[in-house]
Image (cartoon, rainbow, N blue to C red; front, side, top):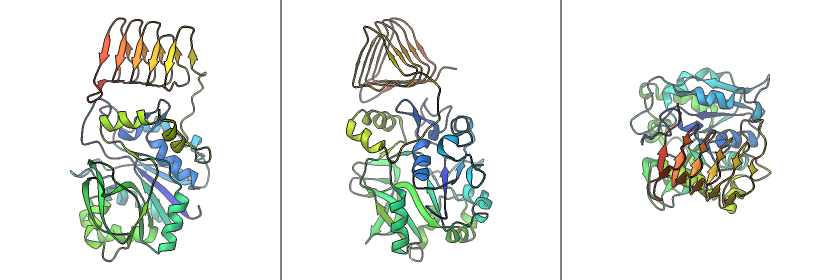
Length: 363
């Protein structure tokens, strides 16, 4: 894709606090054992040829920096363009959960002014999907729109997802929270760069708002059009959605859609050996990651890297993150065990399918 740059915003937090996001931003939450949520936004950009990408950092940015590094795994460690680590606002986001905070964008205005690009792709890191952004950009140019937003028809109620009011493919209103059948915003859009710079001046007095909140009164003069995506989408804004989004990938159809060979999801490389299934182990409908050693029983679960399941231990319908050890005789069921934990022998960590138990990260 020529003359297009990208920007991933990570400076926002979940409305619902949980042990999963107390010590890390949402963007760096582990996903399906070996990925992070931010990998999807970055890979969607890279797969369509974007080679200049900025990431707006939250205050607790350490885990994101550790993961993305110089952008080598995404081909962004380059002399021209490449990965730009950008500062986020120290004052957080608006009460409605803004993800494209104007203050963050204006604060990094030089990133846009120094570019010669025609357009800018924006994305957050809270949605899991694999999309061909080349098609989105082609539709954007063909329609003559000022802004093209990626959308999907909502299949359920979600208070954390933004929704658009749409007439004949053109956005005429925006509100927070979606219900069944509404047009949900997938937190990804493309905008003409010069228009974006103009908006910085238009909305200078309301830089505490989200870009689309500020734009709400201008849908008459700003042509914002939708691009409907019909593939798999998982919004991740709370522990229930996070658990379900991970478990969905155990379905081969979902896995094939999220990880096609022609649009790979890239992630940080780890030099660890393949998972080893020891004699006597039993593994059913589960995903193991590199470095795992499995002696016990695992079913309907996802294991991160370097996890050890000892003989006699049982893991069922759970997510066990990197570096955890489940000792002999222990049982983990309907749970998320954050990284570095040791589940003592003979103990149980048990939640319910409706209320998953979370064991916070070991310190």
